[in-house]
Image (cartoon, rainbow, N blue to C red; front, side):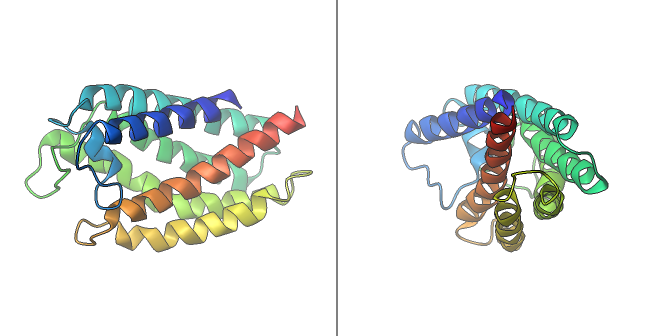
Length: 195
């Protein structure tokens, strides 16, 4: 339970603080990774405390939640995809994107940043759908099903909008992130209530 809450407390706190410390940063038009990019104000701190540590915590959550809940193929695949999503955060702690997070002509670190992050984003809608259906078998977890379905739809809609050509790609990324965060935190709250 604490891995989910600590992970998201760090992500949200660091992102809000780093954006406030960067005059002109626009949550709607810029990626979260730009806060930790090479040359960004406080970029090294953002990658360590906003990506690396939370990523490790959320990888832990996916494992612990799978072990604590009824084990099915759906829950295994769903939490595996949650772990893949968290690996994107964790890897961002090692592979910072270039300033502006521009893909074309990017550095090796930029390419690895995208390589580790892409599977998590593409798998997010599937993860939420699988876990929503798995949660129907969990006693007293009624809210996790609609949250998972709504999150899966929101995440799926945001995927094609994550491209830099879309002006509000930052907003689309926040929708994807929020869909995952809401379900993960709701699942952690459910686990806490069960115990």
